[in-house]
Amino acid sequence: MTVIIRKCGQTCNRLFQFAHFYAYCKEYNIELFNPTFWNLKKYFSPQKKENEKARFFSILTALPRGVLCLIRGKIMNIDSQGKNEEAKDVLRRNDYLVWGWEFRDFQNFVKHAAEIRQHFAINAELVKEMSSEFEHRRREFDVAVGVHIRRGDYRTWAEGRYYYDDETYISFMRQMSKLLPDNKILFIVCSNENLDQTQFGNMEAENVKLWFPKQNFINELHLLSKCDKIIGPPSTYSHWASFYGEVPCLHLMSRDHAIDLQDFKVCSG
Image 1: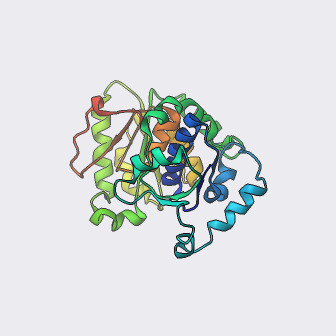
Image 2 (image 1 turned 90 degrees about the vertical axis):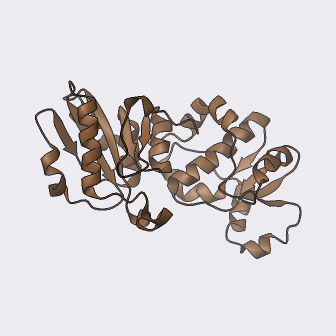
Image 3 (image 1 turned 180 degrees about the vertical axis):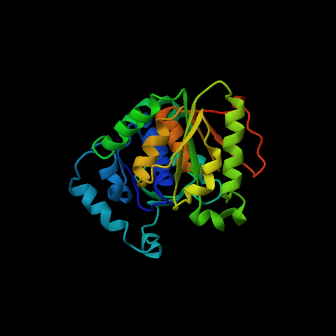
């Protein structure tokens, strides 16, 4: 049995963390609990109902790390250097409480990808209206390109390396338009901050339109997963949309990134 007792980061970091543990435990028939995910359950397909054991584990998520460390031999911080491979070996033989962002099992993630997508399917009721709106808009265009504008914490994360201004994103969209010259393109612009749409007005043309859905994180994640391509700075948000919707994605690694259609890839974990 494995129990994840500490969340790591925001929603899509937590999705990837959970999914890698899910793939590993699925492969080796290990019982898995993740009480840290319960506040997100409503956004995804119905999971198993909580049982008494699961409710007990939820108590552990509130305990200070120092107290947890007193449970000697039954707790593992996988963010410690070199712990990933050790964890894979140990978890097959013992019950453990675990935390850490760095646990990865790419081989089994790929093997069980279809089941992971099903297990973490977005709750259709929550995105029903946006799904209809997307289908209505999409039919007028040849290509839908999701543009993920990540702001907020990116102003300081990695020394602001991936905090791009509006003009930079406009430049990226112009590159995409030139690479798809014979297509009517719908750019679906999603962001974690309010955008001034007037700054993007000169992007629109006869064959190019922009849509700013201004929705919550789950609706915009769903919309990105429905696109034909996704562009944006390095982020697990766009990468999860790519994985979930099997959509080719390109992470823009600098303000002057030269986009090449051959570089788009579907995220595989």
